[in-house]
Length: 318
Image (cartoon, rainbow, N blue to C red):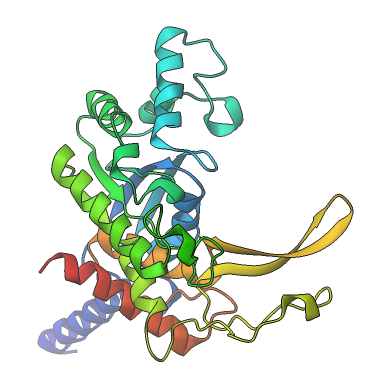
């Protein structure tokens, strides 16, 4: 065989091998360089929502996510700091080690990995009021920075409640957010002010993405104005197409089933949207072509959610 012909065949084989090697899991072309990102969340259930699908999104693109959770349900900046203060006073106290079901202090969590990103956030029902952030947010920032100096600290901008949440009534005007739009605007302003005042490294705009999707003319959630909750019998619930929040659900209390609304926490679609925001922000990779889609979410809707996440992240760069 002609040596040049043999060399040509070998070159073609090598080229094909390199092309195949560039394909990531789920058939998606991997980025030119696989990344490993270590993220620790110091938050609450909203941070749990954000992490639900983040690992799947990362793996679909050939990346690795290592996530740690210093999350406590309904936890405020003040409470997180109270646990830190208790640990500083007595490292053996139960109050000082609330994370991991009472196993770890924040100091322990900060030492678990060489974290790349650490996120902080206020509880949702106080996120509109910047005065509730201080002095605890600054104290937490200084504590974290002293123990993880190489980590970047990001604010997790949480989202507004669903448009039909019971909080949104006219009588609350001037006292607390009385519409979804007002809550979104006040929360966004508070988080961006926090970033400026603490000189944080960045923001995760979950709230921007949720509001963009919620107010989209085609894909946004629209509640039934004639809804009669009393007419529903278990296990039936109102139609909630494209709801980014959990919404109406049956719960049992004192042996009685009740149809209640959770307009706060993210639905599976909401978790996916927020996960897409985090993926693009943390990995620096456009999420629009990511192939991971959770079960139960239609492909076209998932495409819209990815595009919305990309829009929310891109707008911050302008």
